[in-house]
Length: 236
Image (spheres, helix red, strand yellow):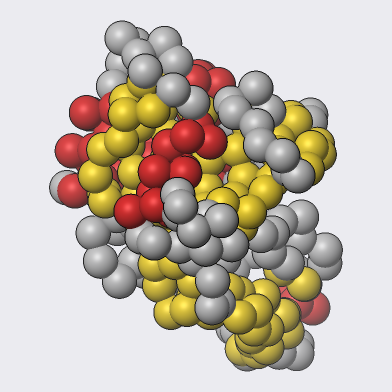
């Protein structure tokens, strides 16, 4: 049996970002491994440039996610007239300046951003090996007292409550998710977990690209995951 830290990700708007195309910011159904790595690293106060730390944390994560029903997808159209000297707020305390040549200031900045509206996502994760720093306990404490403000995917997506939702003992990731669904009396909740971390009749195996090379800041590679519907025990 392993020990899993359970997170509850809830916000009026959540962005599980996918591959951005020009000025269109798309989302994926489940949080990327890189997004969760960044969330935990931000809570720990790590600098984004600490590539080795980020890469190692990402390698150690064994993560699954289950989605409570009832959320919707919405698209936000954003436009702003930005001048050369305009600066943007950042979580690291240093204003971000506008990049680009003079021609980029001539017209408004237009973009479209997709979001999950009123989504509650439950995440269960552990770290392998368990005795390496940071530990699950280190991360739980950091999430309760983060070094910097936390957001779920994009800066406007602030959590509505405490992220840490408790602990779970389970044999594998899927079993940890099953325990969450049973505790919530859920039925037909969509779930994703790593291949090799449990299976069930009717689940679907696929490959996803959601790992970041924190040295180059690019995504690459593929990892196999399973997706299926989970029901509270006794309600299937």
